[in-house]
Image (tube, rainbow, N blue to C red; front, side, top):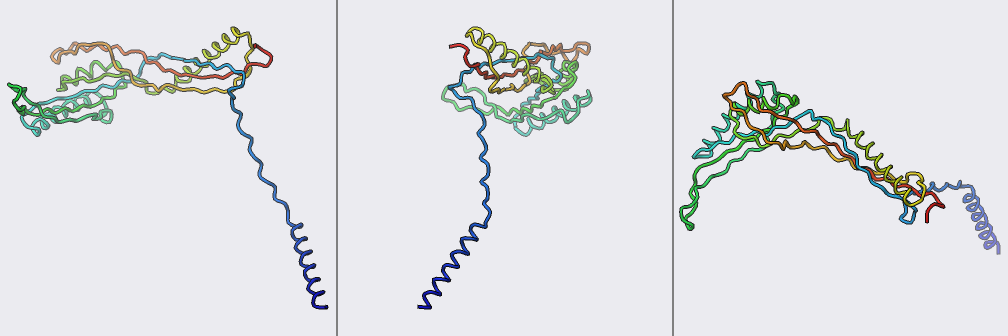
Length: 259
């Protein structure tokens, strides 16, 4: 029948058109798959060694923790007296040449004090209050540390809690410590390879840990000069600072070597 033939012809034409359109569309290439980074397998024939390097240098800065402690029957009175004394200490240090920004408060505390009980069942009796104000003084001229200690004590500081020495730019010597660590690791690898009867191949992996340099506390005992002895200065001998680095190297063992 004519209707059926027309419908069949129309379906055939539409099918051919769709097929040609599908064939005409360009094929989009798939994105390249990145190759994984090479890793050291536990089954690889390798030698793993560690090396530590150290460099000792003279310090170029110091940190002094000074404190003023006061006692009074009330917390307010103890705090007011403490503030007056600490103001004198800071003023004396500034007058001695320490910039005000190099003097920072580290701790401030107020706590009660009690008299010991006469009998075990007696309640503690409040004796008064103690106020402690601690500041850190950053000193960049080490030859003046002893003089500055005497200045602070003469102005009213009655406690020296800490004296530490450090390096202002430790990164300048960390590179040398790292080179020393690499050399020691290489020597260890060569000794191991010789003892095992194998030959070292290329370095497959290297990692490092640089130890942060921290100000070292002043461990030596020293005697404070009396404020009345103007010609006596507290002797201070700075200790050398140690900058450390640690490295791990993984060497391949050349094929055909060893067992």
